[in-house]
Length: 98
Image 1 (spheres, one colour):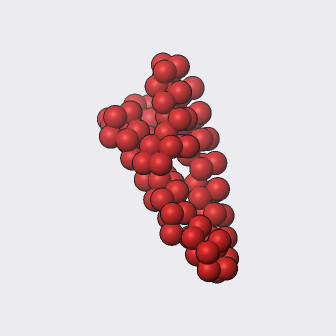
Image 2 (cartoon, one colour):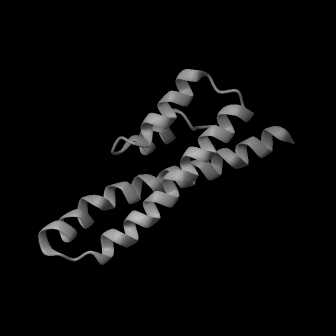
Image 3 (cartoon, rainbow, N blue to C red):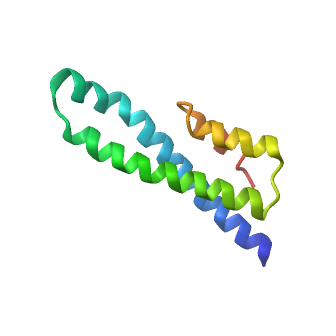
């Protein structure tokens, strides 16, 4: 039963990681809109969504690292993935598979 619960949390982490990665990449669109064209609305929305998804991602990594006793290196790479473009997509493929 506990293994299934851990897999469920890992599935949630994978979804959040994907969404966080997408929101990070959307900044490539909204930043020029804000600074080159003065359109601030999209950047504000994407920024708020990204902030929430980032915090959720970090909390889920901490939860799973402690609960499933991840190695320090795996936890480090999972954290690093959250600040590197395309990092969460890579982490999903290499770190978060069942």
